[in-house]
Image 1 (cartoon, rainbow, N blue to C red):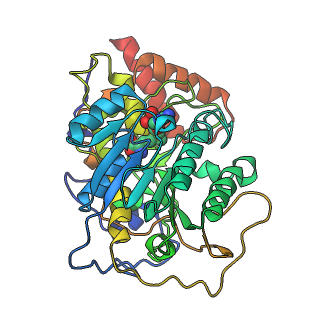
Image 2: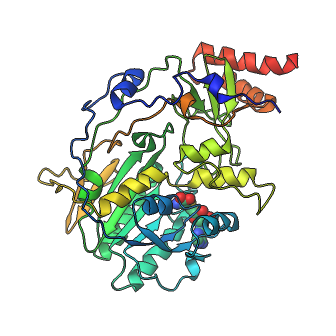
Length: 430
Ligand SMILES: C[S@@+](CC[C@H](N)C(=O)[O-])C[C@H]1O[C@@H](n2cnc3c(N)ncnc32)[C@H](O)[C@@H]1O
């Protein structure tokens, strides 16, 4: 198998971190405030109390690792998949690990409950069975546990795909928020892009925080640096999904599209990257995919568990919560944050999709006018971020994608198609 050294594919200089101002130069003008400093900087408490965290649907521990980095500690992890449990056992020694949320009869003593519940039924590329589907419907087990724990955790943190705001006229988000309100919780949710945290992965996810004891709105909704405008390609590497090509490309400029637990071909697979300077089409290493989610390289290494673990690793990494996003939330739960101003609350739609951010407290609900960028951490260009060798996209994968692309009505750059053709041709020369 041929490998390409990602150093030779750099389109920016090695190790050079970009500030927001530099990033916006490469991406085009920002839509909102350009200043480097966040508008509402968080003032950290001198010694934040350490919170005990129970993680349901823990996967490989994206939430848990972010919370750990913020000084909190996991007390129980619940995860159905044996391979993911194997990773958790290695990464969170001395933490109780349980298997099935449906078998839990009560929650452990904890201040925070995290639950990045399954997205298969809510995802655009998934089965779209909705919130009552066999996988995403498992959120009911979480509500059952919360109902039965009279004191309960102070905070509940959920995560899922943004399509949950749109599918079936926003049925999933309406159901989740109604359930919380029935149990006396306030709630706030926000769509957050992992690129805001310095990761060159365009990964938009809905984070919802609910609490009976606290106001979750300041935690999630008061920090905002404004969204970046659409990126100009320049000579930067672009991510895309070689499994697509009929109705979409998953195109991302100077970033990879969201890592996924599945694909249009129903197998977990890596995205591909086009390096225009080198006319190369390649696939990142799993270790870089782990880093693109904020884990250390090798986080899901399963050599001592299953030698055919490649696909499993891509699925587990694709399912995970990005660690720096989780860390930011975890820090804000114990930080002094400024009050949320709800004087000019815009109502939520009675029917149809819900907005990208919103809140409910007492008898009131409102749309939140915030971007998907609560912060703007310095980032590396995608090509500079990669530290492991990339592998050329196989002839079969590239050829299949190319033939779908040329038959499609999708818009794409001529240079991209030319480089794909060049890539496929290069196999014939071998
Ligand atoms: C979207 S992933 C969550 C990923 C996790 N937050 C992370 O950072 O890796 C959903 C997880 O729920 C797990 N799951 C599915 N059914 C479950 C069940 N009945 N009990 C516990 N976990 C379950 C899946 O195996 C999957 O790892």
